[in-house]
Amino acid sequence: MNLLVALEALLDEASVSRAADRLHLSQPAASAALKRLRDWFGDPLLTARGKRLMLTPYALRLKPQLAQLLTEIDAFASQPAQFDPATTHRRFRLAMSDFLTSVVLRPLCAAIALTAPWIELDIVQPDDNSSELLDRGEIDLLMVPQEFISPRNPARLLFEEQHVIVGWSGNPLMQKPLTSDSFASAGHVSVRLGQITRLTFAEAQLRALGIVRREEVIVPSFAIVPDLLVGTQRLAIMHERLARLAAQRTEIAIAPLPFAFPPMREMAQFHRARADDAGLLWLLDEIARLLSRDATPQHS
Image 1 (cartoon, rainbow, N blue to C red):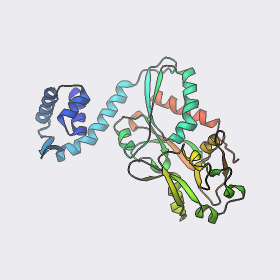
Image 2: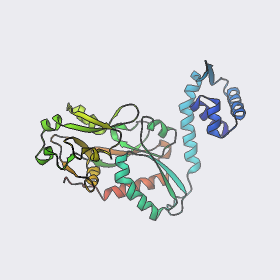
Image 3: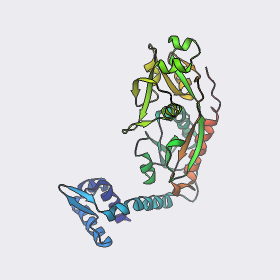
Image 4: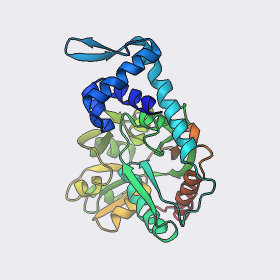
């Protein structure tokens, strides 16, 4: 097992020194582990290319199999005979957007403080590598729209979300019913996620409908959009739950979209090796229960 963990670090880092740091080993100890692995597999695994080490074709084939194996071993070894939220000491790492942290995390933290005081939540933003992190077991739940989940692992529907138009309450466009033309001709604040440009659900749907906006401001966060609308004539498409929360503290108005727009299906995806993980299933049930309290948002 120690050699398998060392192999994972060596293949991920493609560097003996960085793998040693990750494993909290000396560099000679990491080099010794690499030698034993080379002897075992009968392959150099890492070869020098100039000043860099590159994975051999055999190592590239091993890497995804190793990630799956270690994830399954971790799931096997970490599951207790029984799961008791009141006494368990466990950390869950969740990948969720700031939309979800705004509408889910606060009630979830409050509920867990009462029923599962020893559970820890580690929240990270989804990015371009989230599916790979899930495959490697580095995150427990990936919470994204259905269009962005990976076919390699199971997923569960959390809720459906409608989208609305949001603008400053003093914006003349928000004083009368919006049309498709007035929507398209207005300036907009939009959101992009990930280091590689990745469309949000809303932007992907607009493009599918052939609707082109004038994107005057593009930001990496859903939650900051309302503040960027105040005092301007810009509009934005927002999740309705998030828009209603923002309207409680910001001078924004909410209006329905002037064209047909499908609901967003927000999913929670987990590794296939954790399909019977009692703790993870409990957490999913808690999230679903909290969301059911807010299942019927109303336009304001």
